[in-house]
Amino acid sequence: MPGFDSVMRWVGAIGITLAPLCVFLIPLLMYPQNFATPADQFRAIAEGSTGGYAGQVMQITGAVALMAAALGIGGLTIARRRGRTLGIIGLVTGAVAAISILVVLGFETAVAVTLISSSMGTDAAVALAVELYGSPAFTIPLLVGLGGFMVALLILAFALWRSRVVPIVVPLLFLLPLLVTFIPLPATASALVPNLLMLVPCLWISVQLVRGRLRSAASPAAVPVAGARDPVES
Image (cartoon, rainbow, N blue to C red; front, side, top):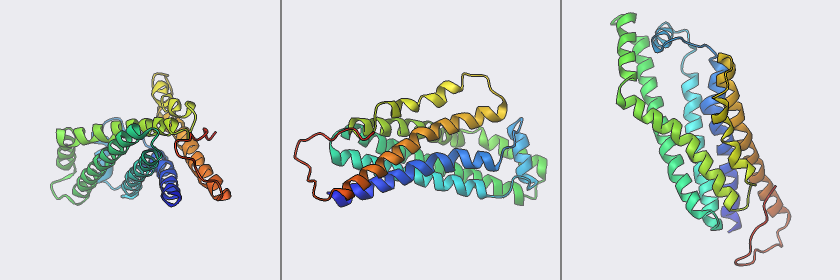
């Protein structure tokens, strides 16, 4: 089904590019402040010095992009039948992670609105926000969302490797952000460098997906033989 293959490639390519950009990197560049404690961050929100809701909107876009990446790459690998199991696991994990991130962002937005519009006073509102953010209702979806984000991308990358779309080095590159966390770096670099490293395999996957689509479009006469293995797109 060349039409389905093309759609899944584009959806996956766009999604896996925008997901890390919008969830992590762009908000980090928009708000480079380093708050010593959560209370300091909530106080800045209450005082209106964090720039409004642009960061939340960007991260909501990233969560939707993660779901698109899971759908596109998972659907592609399932259809190609190589890496199908990994594609299914990646699709489910990505969807759960995206939903969890959306729940967290909804929670954050509600708390931000409460802080800005509360009549109980800044100190009381900040204390309430700190208590809410420490509750399981926030921490569990946060851990599921952030952990699931990384796990989903890793599994989807391995699914593409099994489908012979990317070489094995691509999924292995997702381990670099984790390894960098063990290297002592300045505060800003410790947040920025892992996100930049995570973007590298995502962009590689995106390019490979698009190249495969353009290559197929340039050879319309090529008909896949049943049971034939596709070469690795490198």
